[in-house]
Length: 310
Image 1 (tube, rainbow, N blue to C red):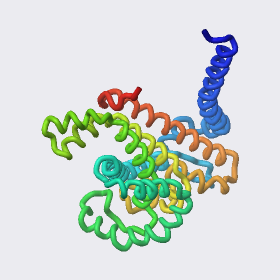
Image 2 (cartoon, helix red, strand yellow):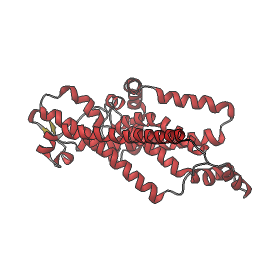
Image 3 (cartoon, rainbow, N blue to C red):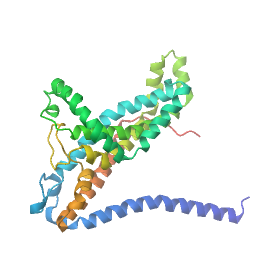
Image 4 (cartoon, rainbow, N blue to C red):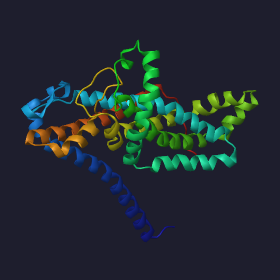
């Protein structure tokens, strides 16, 4: 029989953990409130037109967020397009194929990549990656895929494609680490049952492991997407920072986060200042909407996923 003090301790623990959980929601609500409060002059003047306008003219106090919204979505899509296959393949190799002596060094390097500050990756991107892309990759893409509007036109180095590539480098460790833990949690009975039915190693990985863990891997991809949507410094250094959006990936552009970072110290009027806060509010809204859509897709298309082990 439990003593009264023990029950009191349980109640204290329950309410304390609940308070910590509610603090997360309170923090998000507070951030949203502050952004909305400081965005009021811009909201009152431009209304919904702010979201569909491509004009950004501080001289005449005319502002629009559409190029930055599109830049954020396109750069994040490019990052996922590159990072997801690499990350999932790396996680599968580390979990299913890599010899024991090689696993820990590879895991250490992946964690080291995740620990590199974004400004360092940005410096590497602008001085090493962008010149290399300009000299080798962009000409190849233009010659082979130039019939597509995405790979037409001249390039000057910093561009939307460079931003997508640097973002992919930044989210690979996140998706890889989470996917690896998901794959490790797949019960061994899944593999043994597939082997017993005569499946090959590849079939076991595809049917018994990846199929079982697809829900968790999708969640890992969403975590990477969240990082890509809000990344600032590295993107600011390689995207070119122009308030425009053109179909060609070789042209400079901007994302919501990069444009806020690039323009905040140059705000010369209250409306300019308020418009930048509204860009932050839009970024918060885009992040929330994307995550809601991802959760709906997860419930609609994903299978049962990885079940918790007791």
